[in-house]
Image (cartoon, rainbow, N blue to C red; front, side):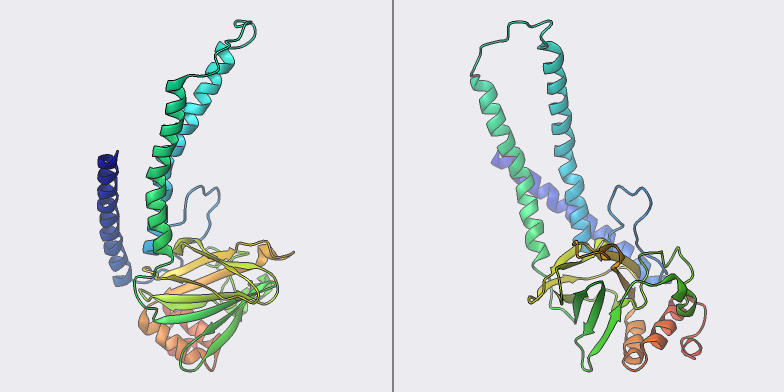
Length: 305
């Protein structure tokens, strides 16, 4: 069994390395090209994960697919056993049930089998859990996210602190905000002020709340952290693809829980630095200028007027 476990771990590491290499290549291609206006959001009838934008989310996706190799056979086996029992041992063909109370072979199998299966699931599970709480490098950007009923306050912990509120975008405000394209800025997910971060930058997010428990969740990044009043929790991400990503509060927090989206715009270092400098004095103007540059519609200087 130990030999099998060693082979499994070696195969898992090889697969993870291959995935990381392929993902790094894909990320480089994305960064080299023009940044997309849209990167990831929920889709109708979606049953899988959103396209991963971080290495952590790729690991989560791999683990989810890996566990299916255990879940599907076990489910089929249980259904087959139930069908056999219903058919073979129904009262009409088996009026006198067996009085057997013990079967050594079966008891050994249903004890040892689950233990082995749980070991094959537990080892990569613990590795993934450890990776989620162990950033591979020091954070270059720290942002504090505070949940309110029902919006988010963001605070950039930079030289000159930048703070702003992010709330769901009302339909009547779309034209003024330049967000009329519902494919890029979907209803119930678009916000008035997105969280803007640079690509390929380790970002620490300090999560808390002012009233009730909320949850800061971004599916494409593989993060989900509860926002608890009076307590500061910490999560992190390193987005590898530019674009606009959507998440939501994932903790029942009151009547407008469904109207508390999270939007993160990942841009290049140059775009982020330009936006940050302008946002400290004129946030709406900085957002419009960034949107114009990302969308390729106007020059940054002209968009700010």
